[in-house]
Each structure stands twice: as structure tokens, then as C-alpha cells.
Figure 1 (cartoon, rainbow, N blue to C red):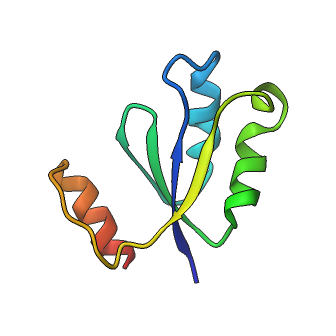
Figure 2: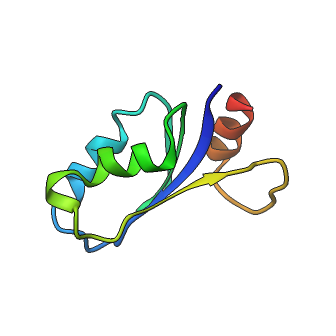
Figure 3: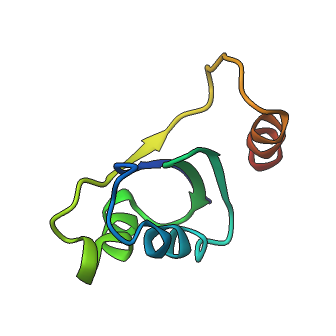
Length: 88
């Protein structure tokens, strides 16, 4: 069964399009703010990080963390709420 993970990185990351393309290789993702993403995958946080950071980004700041959506609240775009509900 899959898990939700949060991914973030600096907005001034050199070659930022490459990391975006790597995130999009996960079958299910949501880019809810500029450099902030959720992915739904069976991979671990470490595995996700390794896939994103290999080569060009090994020394850059990238955070990957598991997210539990059992208790959340806020104001975001409608497609994010729909995406979360679809995956749960």
C-alpha cells in the first residue's frame, strides 16, 4: 500500500526543472506550491530522496518526509483536496 510523502527544495535550485521532471516520474504527485510537492508511492523516504538527488543534486537541500493525512486543515486549491481524498 502506498504512502504520502512531502518533498521540498529551495526555489533557487540550479536546474530546478530536472528535479521537477524526476518528481513527475512518480505515478501520482501533486505540486501544490512552487517547490512543494506531495507524492503517493510505495517507495520509502530514503528511496525517493536517492532518486531525486542522484548526480546533480547530491549536495543540495532536499527534504522528503512521510505525511499522515488523518488530521489536516487549511486553505489550498481545490485540486489538492480532491487529490488527497482520491488517494485516501
